[in-house]
Image 1 (cartoon, rainbow, N blue to C red):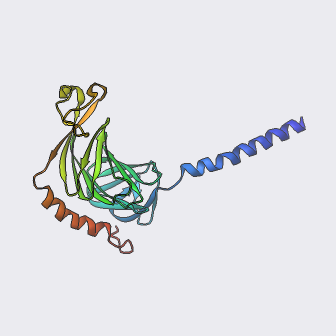
Image 2 (image 1 turned 180 degrees about the vertical axis):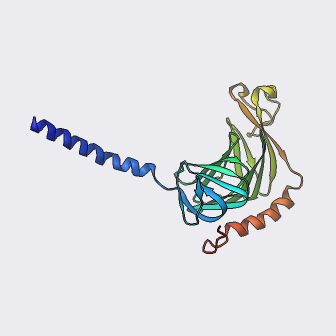
Length: 233
């Protein structure tokens, strides 16, 4: 009986030790807050230098802003915005719930941003700056300040070219009449539309080049401001 109890104790200890690496992996940080003004991390004030993890929520007030960094990738939010952070093996992965979020990636990190079910993703080996705004129940404005990146939903993919600003409407595929919208493959039709639930209707803004150029200067300044002199509240 005593030997049996000892064997059970040893088995419990081994099980506890085996579970330690799993718990540690689940708690792997995504990055760090480098700038914060009138912003929250979960339910607390977001402090510069705080570590962020998958599952964290970041919010900004009507006059707030926040910026975080993971490797060479950066993610920031404008005022009255909210995001949920998600697991990422190389860069930043976030869901924009409301408002406006910007991102930048170096050549070694990837930024993936989802909004209204659509996914904006930078490309491996491409340094980019971009911004996404939720402007309606099924509508986004997506801008490239530097470099190309992609937006997709249910296999319908479109390139956002360098300097482009576009309006993106998310629509039901069945309402588009089986290929009345141009797909991301450039064929002029959307293959296997019956297998898709959503499509992207992308409209180019006429003033995209001017707006992107001016906005690009300010976003470049913000993304490259020294983290040693952040705005904090």
